[in-house]
Every structure is written in C-alpha cells, then in structure tokens.
Length: 180
Ligand code: DGI
Ligand code: FE
Ligand code: FE
Image (tube, rainbow, N blue to C red):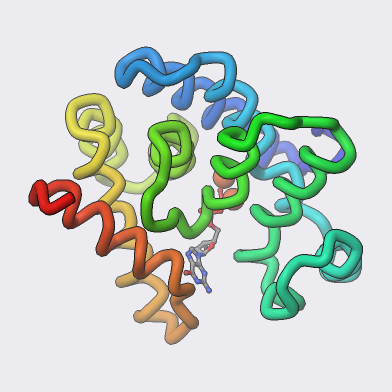
C-alpha cells in the first residue's frame, strides 16, 4: 500500500480504516471486514492513467471507465483485491467497488465504507464534526447528505453523474422515509 500511494492518500486510508471500525462497532457490522475494506478501498487511487486504463482492460471492466480515474479507481481496487489478493468475501469486494458512487440496495458494510470515506479524521471541510456525529447517530441520513453534496458538487463542475450515484440517493431517501 505504501509503495502505491502518496503519503496523504496513505494517511487517508488509515483514517478510513479507523472510522470504518468505529462505525462498524456502532452499527453492528463485522469489524474485521470494515477494517480491511477501509484500509484498501483506495489502493488504486494513485495509479497513473496508463496503469489504470490497462487494469480496466485486464479485468474486463466497462469501457466507460477508460480515462475516468475518479470512477475507475474503486472498480480497479475491487478487481485487484479479488484477483491478486485472493479476497473472496463478496461484501468486502462490493464495499470497495461501490465506495465512490454508492448504489441502490447497499449492504450495511457498503454504506458504512461509503460514509467512512467521506468523514474520516483527515478530511478538512468545515462541517466534518457534524458529519462524523451524524454518521454515529443516523447512518442513512449521513449517507444521504454525502450523496446530496457529491451530486451538487459534480453538477457545479458540469461532470457526469453516474447512475449508481443517483440511484443510491433515491434508495437511501426512500429508506429514510420508510418506503422500503
Ligand atoms: O477516492 P477518494 O478521494 O477518497 O473519494 P471517492 O472515491 O469517493 O471520490 C473520488 C471522486 O469521485 C470525487 O472527486 C467525486 C467523484 N465522484 C463521485 N461520484 C461520482 C464522481 N464522479 C463522477 N464523474 N460521477 C459520479 O457519479
Ligand atoms: Fe476513492
Ligand atoms: Fe477514499
């Protein structure tokens, strides 16, 4: 991990690991799975364009990921854990695979890694403490607010919003309202 990640990304990974463990304890998820997924979720984040694209092809991932490292790094990380590190736990793989977009029907572990990624201690935005507290008291609400923020941010930058991101927001909103 140290070889592949910049110092700040390495620190972020340990921060997500730590936050994922805390949230797993609060919400009754498997702590060791949360620790592992948190630690390795961004393992491919600092791959250069050439290496990322070659991994997308090597693992037969969707063509839409070519040239899009923001979305590719989570799919590539999941493929590496599965194919090179022999990780066979589907929930861990999916937590890594969907950590950037989320998705409809996320498992508890997936949701907790998605939230931990956004609220770990090394993040620097103003409302960090508020989001950390929300994650401890209402995981769905935290997940929803993070998705709202992400979508607002991507819109402001006129970047494409992946359908998994949109569907995740819809799903968690319905879950909050008690419709499913
Ligand atoms: O890898 P991290 O920086 O820790 O965080 P991340 O994996 O959640 O997100 C990385 C980037 O992905 C961030 O700049 C926002 C972007 N992103 C999240 N959802 C979408 C997205 N980009 C696009 N194009 N579409 C999405 O739906
Ligand atoms: Fe990431
Ligand atoms: Fe991350």
